[in-house]
Length: 330
Picture 1: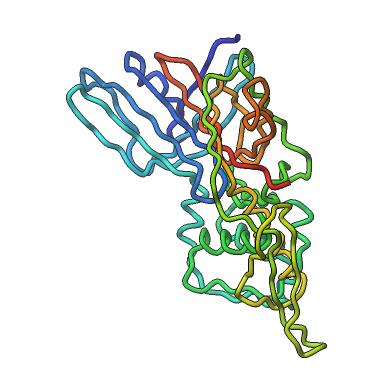
Picture 2 (picture 1 turned 120 degrees about the vertical axis):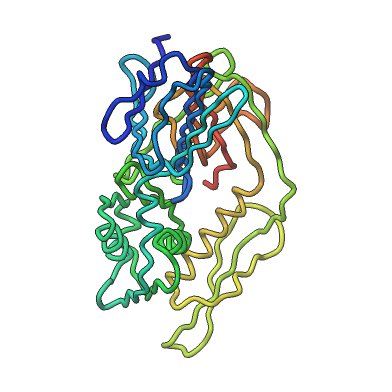
């Protein structure tokens, strides 16, 4: 296997050499959701000589193997902790773009006549905070019945409407990425690579948890049909047995109700189990991909949807990737 390599720059300057002589561990979590991507650096600073980045510094971690490295994006340092004895420094950071969205708190209405699709809403908000929008075409074209940002910040607002259209909304470097939840696709529409997981190949350890969560045969949602002047219903099957699950809040139109029912049906399936797989470091493993597991045992082998991929680099240990997974919904 090629040699593991990683580096860290602060405000555009490579600071990796500052940590020479210290025991370094760098952990990057690539997750779904706007608050999920984080960076954690731990330094064993025995003689107190290491100069740590200050809060507010912009860090850019890069890691992987010789000839196969990944730029994990930009993180703003939000906390530096010094402890002793022995002396240690812990540095944590959050996605730069996510912090910008958290500051965007501007009450605004998004009426249909000015913002006919959800793509128009996402384009407006990302432009305000200097992000590039990468949104799958199928989500971008969904009609906007009417949305409004009230006292929410940008993170909360985009997360809320992402749930309505069954989308995962996340920040990767300076891009806002919006993809269909559980589809295993990138914003371009292309499929993400499967992450192969197997003993003897890359699997270090695993844990699978089957949950006795309530099962429902279908999800029902209601909407008001103005033409008929009546309340109508739509349903979405889950593929499981059990009673009907009712979404109590009414929706404005049929398409919106159908999307909500389908999204909830998939969520109910995903809630039936979760798993953790620790594998040899895989730089390009990321949330929304699928882990294809073989060679373990029945009810463990198969496809799992990756909710987050945590990459841990260490000066004194191996590079590993931890996959937090759930039951795929399709």
